Amino acid sequence: MRVLVTGGSGYVGSHTVRELAAAGHEVVIYDNLSTGDRRLSEGFEFIEGEIADGARLAPVLDRVDAVMHFAASAYVGESMTDPRKYFRNNVESALKLIDAVLASPVRTFVFSSTCAVYGIPQACPIDEESRKEPINPYGATKLFFEHVLEAYRVTHGLRYVALRYFNAAGAHASGLIGEIHDPETHLIPLALKAALGSAPPLTIFGSDFDTPDGTCIRDYTHVSDLGSAHVLALEHLAEGGASMSVNLGTGRGTSVREIVDVFHALTGIRIPHQYGPRREGDPPCLYANPARANEVLGWVARRNLEDILTSAWGWHQKFESKTA
Ligand code: UDP
Image (tube, rainbow, N blue to C red; front, side, top):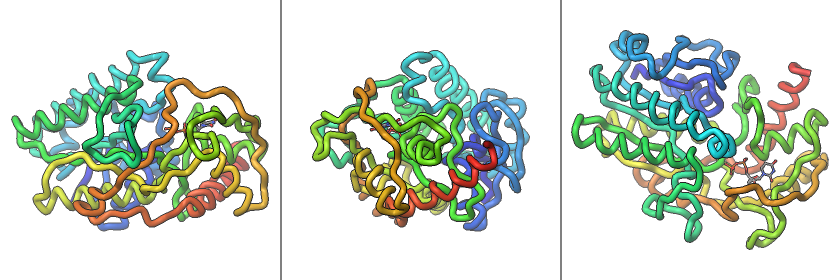
């Protein structure tokens, strides 16, 4: 299939386009490079543009079979301080993208959603029917857009899969692409940068959570596994499969402390760190029940925490030495 990938120069998008290409699909990347990095989309057809620019999208939509929509603002903390940016980019502009899609023959849509739609879960693991009460504007915008997709399924025959990622992590096996965020706020890159001495010591946010070691638990999922789930979602829709939202996680929770310890066990390197206060809005524990992804898409996360840390470490050593 030919697939328009908005945000294909971002972290999850750039790994997904490689999974699409490996599965024999053609890719057109559409990105405004506001947070994406051109280096991550080298080797693919690339169009620089805004998702709100229907006139620019129309000729591209005429020559593709499906859209994968990654382009969005995706910092939870920033969404608390600058919510207008999130409502503008993730809702207002995304509505214009979907208008352009509905004006075209394309009806197949894969959406990059998030476990932030759940807010603070009542219990873990979290399945798709769990209560959805986002606690930040980022999660609220993603949940809103899921409602848009469902409404347009009913009225316009749109067919979609919304993939709710837990914590994307790791880097591509080629060593050519990996996580680049500016500013960086995510645990694993900050920990590895601290290990390299290119960032200050890691601050572990909170040591008094109600978890076995007192630090937060998350479901770290390799970004290439997320990418392969997008391919399976596309193929599910192409085969006439039902529209739905699907969790993407390993089903295994890992604490911040474990990340530091496993990295030390793997490399012999200690991540310089200190404990600090909790970060506002951090739920103590988030991990997925990924049964639906397995049952409906035939997907399972193949890479474990060691694979995540090893690939991310390879990438950060190379990338930091290039940018130093
Ligand atoms: N975290 C931390 N120090 C940091 C960044 C993150 O202790 O400098 C913790 C954070 O509190 C959370 C986990 O690491 O429990 C993952 O945070 P991240 O920002 O990577 O992803 P999130 O779970 O917020 O999407």
